[in-house]
Amino acid sequence: MSAEEDFKRELPHILVLAVLLLVLLIVVTKFKWIHCSQVPGDWCNVYCSINGKSRVAIVSGENGTGNPSALFNLTTNIRQNTYLEPYPANEISASLLSNYELVVFERMREVTPRQVSAILQYADRGGSILWVGDAGVEQRLSADDLAEAKIKNESDPGYYEDFVEEYNKSKEGFGRLEALFRVSFQHMENGTSLRMKVADRNSLMMKGLNQTFDINAKQFAKVNADVSKSALVASVYGTSACTFDSPCPALVANKYAAWMVYISFPPEQIKSQTALNNIFDFLVTC
Image 1: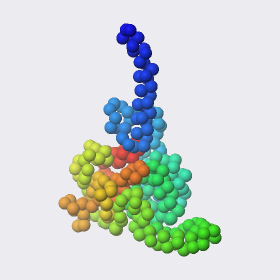
Image 2 (image 1 turned 120 degrees about the horizontal axis):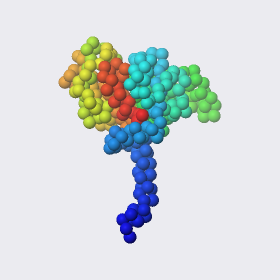
Image 3 (image 1 turned 90 degrees about the horizontal axis):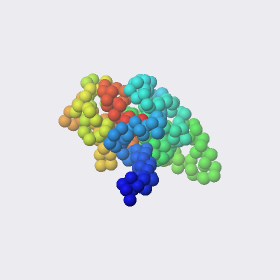
Image 4 (image 1 turned 90 degrees about the vertical axis):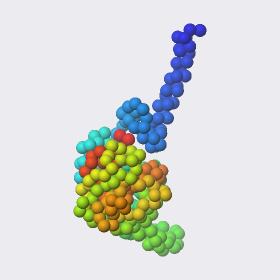
């Protein structure tokens, strides 16, 4: 049998293997087991042409750190393949969040139990989150939360009291959301000449950056990071409490169902567009 005949006989098997490899690459990229840039060749563009634009929601409330409009405009300019959409915090639900590959929570200092439940459901189902500064540190019971608890109490006596008691136990700092990011909130820290310091040179979020670089922030959230369960990617320094030799956590990544990233100050205040683009590259593919 000639080499040409051998090739024709094996061609269907080769095509099947090629299709299976393509499907495998799509799956491992979609679920972020690998980043598209880690695959040789132009896989990022190939994947994005197949999968379409990544969808990102920017959720914000009425108070807290950050400027969602500035983040939207800046990110739109540097990431034309990413679809961004702003949402007010009072409109979010688990079903709405499920439409997005990534949700950014910024300027949302107040959060209700219903919103927390929606966020946790979104994370449990494999959504990625970028959590900013003091988002979620003031937890309050809304009228809807109390009304829903009273309705459930009619068929489950004692539910209302248990609900309020559980709320009081978990309303400090990030409360139940702390499990997503593995950071605990202390307070807001002020500074005039703040800088970031790379902690993990191997992180894709720090690719192509100098060891230290300027930021426009004059304030950041001072947090404790559980580095036994999360990765400290970058730190911030420039205050008496956060020095070059003893900086404070600024960028922390934790693998939940998908990646959860906490940043202690608004990302639009990073002076480096490379750094901002890296963060979004890490969390979304296209």
